Length: 295
Image 1 (cartoon, rainbow, N blue to C red):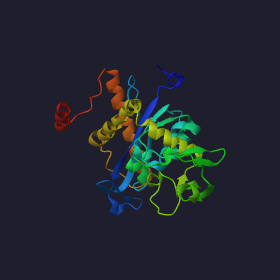
Image 2: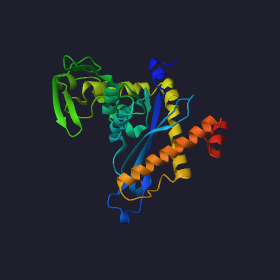
Image 3: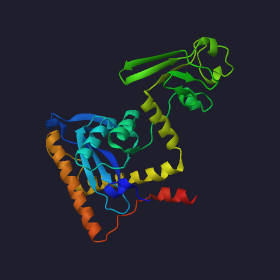
Image 4: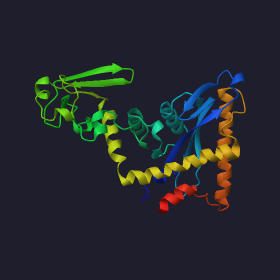
C-alpha cells in the first residue's frame, strides 16, 4: 500500500553510498590520505544518493564530495539538508552502518520526518557480548523521575548529567547496599567492590538506539534493507563506465563538479534505458555464492 508521502513524492526511498576517489597527490594541495578496511588512497571521497523505488528508474538525486578522511557518519546531516533544500527528501533513507548513529536517527525523524534505516552498532559491553549478562537494554529508565530500575527491581541512587566530547551524557550509579549482596551480581558487574554504573545518552538518542537494535532483528527490516544493495551497482557503474574513482582536476571544488557531471551522465543513461524498455541487469552472483546456495 502506498503511503500519503509516497503519493506526494515519488522519491520515496533513497540509498546513499561512499566511494574513495584518488588523485595525483604530488600536485594536489587539498588531497588527503585515508584508509577504509584494506584500501588506502590519497584524494577525496564521493557520496552518491539515489532513488530505489521498484516502479521508477533509479536516479542519482544528490552528490557530496569531501576530502578523504571525513567520516561517513558526519556527512548524513549535510546530505539530508541538501535534499531538503532541493525538495527531494525521501520517506525512507537506506544507509549502511557507516552513516548510522543515535543523533542521526533522531534528527532524521525530528527535522525531516525521514525513517532512517540501517544496521546500528552493537552494544560492546561485555554483558551484551556474553548474552547472559544484564546490558543496558535490561534496565528500565524512568526519564521523568530520573531513576533507573535494574532487572532485580532495585532503583539507582545517583543521576548525573554531564557534557563530554561525544555530547551530553548521563551517568547513573546504583547503591553498594543493593549491589553487594545481590545474587545476580556476576551477571551485572565484574567489579569486586563497586556497584553497577551506567552511561546513557539523552532520552531521544537512547530510545532511538534501543528501537533500532530491536528492529534490525526482525524479518521486516531485512526485507526493507535489502533494497540498499543496489547502490553498490551504481558505484560500480560510475567506476567502470565513467571513471568515477579518479579525480581529473585539481581541487575539491573542481572534483565535485566532475562528480555532479558523472551523476548526470548516469541519470541520462538510465532514463534512456527506462524509456526504451531496457530493464536493469540483475545483481550478479559469484559462482562460489551460487554453489553455496545449492548446498
